[in-house]
Length: 122
Image (cartoon, rainbow, N blue to C red):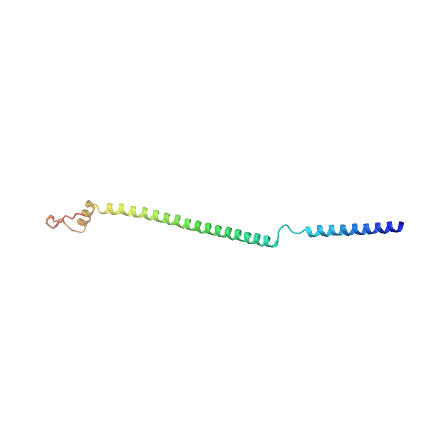
């Protein structure tokens, strides 16, 4: 019986060792990644779209900035030209005064003949 008991004990130890190996194998197979390959692919595609969208938004903002700068520059040029035009209008009104024209005509030897004068209304 002693032999039978030791043989039974060995079998139990062998079974116990096999169970431990199975448990170790189960533990190894359970250590898979947190994400499946499909989820990783979807994450990669989503990341690519986010990067593409970010670059697209930044490039649009840069072009808007350049366009606004051009608009501001054009407005400055327009204001400067309007100022020049108003100065020139003031010069025209000063140079077209009746007394000045009459004095200039006398310098050139012209005389006023009332019978040749025609009144023009705008």
